Amino acid sequence: MYLKALDIYGFKSFADKISLEFNSGITGVVGPNGSGKSNVADAVRWVLGEQSAKALRGSKMEDIIFAGTEHRKPLGFAEVSLTIDNSDGTLPVSFCEVTVARRVFRSGESEYYINKTPCRLKDIHELFMDTGIGKEGYSIIGQGRVDDILSSKSDNRRQIFEEASGIMKYKVRKLESEKKLELTKQNLVRIDDIINELE
Ligand code: ATP
Image 1: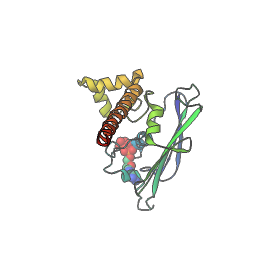
Image 2: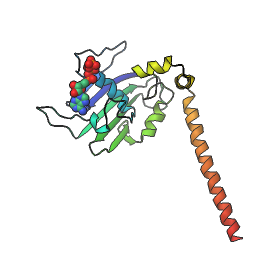
Image 3: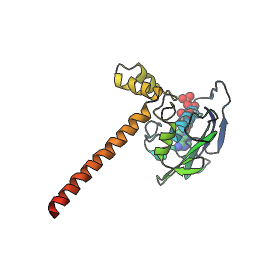
Image 4: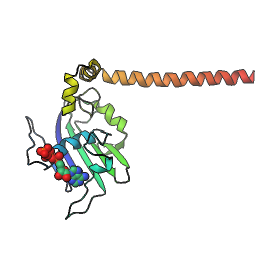
């Protein structure tokens, strides 16, 4: 599995559609200060489901939509698509290429897609869980993340190791099951009350 392509339109400084193709080996993004290098990393973070405007260096989510310049009007929406080569079957889907996409409008409405099919953010999280890819994954190492790894707080370090060892998805499923169990227990208590009232 590897990152094959990134398509960006209307995201931060990218008013025109740009398509980046990644080949094997290391790819470096170079350019003068303020030319948008970090915006490329932000686009990857965002398409993988980042919900915090602060983590994307903005104050509100609308800040990620191209805001216009002296010579160009602002745009109404932003869209990023990230294509992963899955010919080794690392992702739990039968496609050898997987494209996840996210679109957001100024109204705040957000859409997610997997291979052009609308989906929920949860589906994107589940697709990448335990692969190291994702906004919490270890495939994007920002400055704060380095601090987490070096942190003396064992809980922070533990989360990274859990994702790497592939047990995160079981922990998430356990939590979901526990929630359902709790709801079912509450329903049972309610049913007992109703039965008692009827008797
Ligand atoms: P440095 O090397 O200094 O870290 P960089 O190449 O990483 O810079 P970025 O931080 O990615 O640059 O990009 C900053 C640029 O993006 C700024 O010029 C800023 O005006 C522009 N920018 C950010 N958000 C928007 C937006 N919503 N609309 C238009 N331009 C934006």
